[in-house]
Image 1 (tube, rainbow, N blue to C red):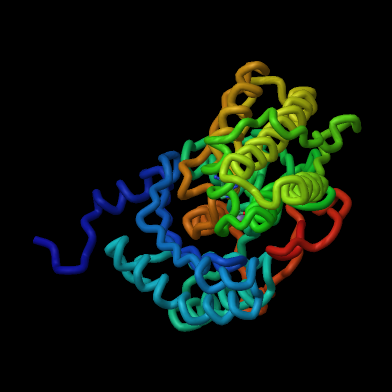
Image 2 (spheres, rainbow, N blue to C red):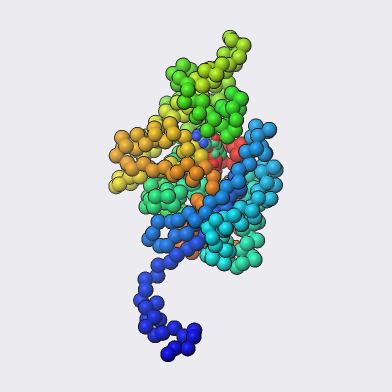
Length: 384
Ligand code: KG4
Ligand code: ZN
């Protein structure tokens, strides 16, 4: 008969010989642009990760009157909504803060007021509970999503396409990325958003332009295919909106206004230009990737623009032509969310990363520190 609290000898032996399989549960926070989000992700080593909850409070309505994200409004809304999101994420997961192993938070890049709101909230949780704090690069969150959703092994080629970013990356590890190329001006999501604004369509522009394009003729207007004459896989999208503005103004001058069909044709022509450009540059990025990683190549896409069906299917067929496996996250994990931040934090945590209460919010934070800085700062925050 054993006294309570005394572990039998054979069980102690079993614990000694049991392989060190570790289950980690991480709370993630995201507030770098116009979505306030919290999520709980769990993973047992060697098994697929599980998204136990993922709560996103969008701010589209708050910014709709201004034609873009207003940083001060975004930051205030994040500060007001973060604790609600955390509470809902824990409730939906059926867990409490005591069940967490760490708290991960987007520490950049993004709109600095929003990033600070998230970092302050995570620091508060860490200070109050003693949970380890993990700062996460928002772009790493997107770039590691194929591992969260499909358990993709390193290395793989990633096209990250969102409202503020567009780059080709080789993902070598949770914190190691090589950038092969990227946009030299606007990101594709930004171009979709500007196109929507020029045509009086609702924000965010991506889904509205895509919906209009379904009824349009992509061949009626001839949009440019920027930078295809230049070698490599850098991209440019700012010329597309200028071309669209000229075409729109010409129709208005000729006919006094746009018909529904004009608008649909403009959207279809614009979208086809983005699709063709991304398809050709992806072909080149795959060729570069295969030079150093010829075995079982995997091409992944992530970020809000990866929600676009035409873009997804073009990338899928380019990958198939190159004999590569193609993977794209489900739509709700393409756009900003905290599950990707919790997961990226979990990967960093497994590697032994810990941040202190001196963790700082960073407006710029390139994933590949060795590549030259990208140009300009985007409407949705600084480009990395
Ligand atoms: O990744 P995300 O949620 O936020 C950033 O980190 O930027 O991406 C948002 C961007 C917006 O510009 C939005 O217009 C675009 O993704 N987007 C789309 C689609 N859905 C969202 N672009 C094209 N087609 C879509 N279906
Ligand atoms: Zn994003």
